[in-house]
Length: 179
Image 1 (tube, rainbow, N blue to C red):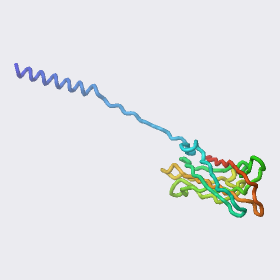
Image 2: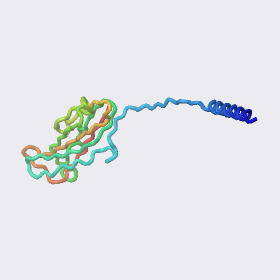
Image 3: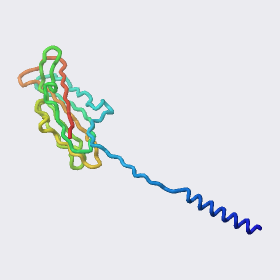
Image 4: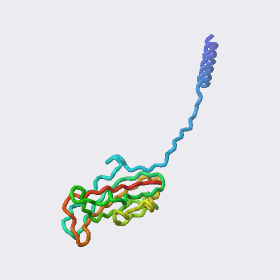
């Protein structure tokens, strides 16, 4: 009787194990995600804008003053950057005299576009000739490097043979990144 009980127990355990194996089965899922083309100024620090570029005071007729700010541009493709070359980009004393300063800009990238995302630096140019919309400054995307530091420089000086009126001068330069 003991042998029969052991045999029956083995049959029951064997059937239970086979039933348990038959009750499991694997299913796989293919997961996909598409990354769209992206061009986006870093918006963590200042809502996607450069911090103010504060140029030191001009204290004599012949000396120019400059300063700069950097902003990260995220991209996963090649693009062009253009600048505002309207009067908005010129330093003007807008409260009393509407006097102007000689206003120049330049642009530098932390990458060259060959070994990391970037482009060719843009030399100093007057506000109305700085990266015009018809040409643009090319930024080349480098695989696995989806960010480039863009540094905007601004320079102010007096006209030759003239000294500007005293006061606070302001300008608004806008850089546009497009495909």
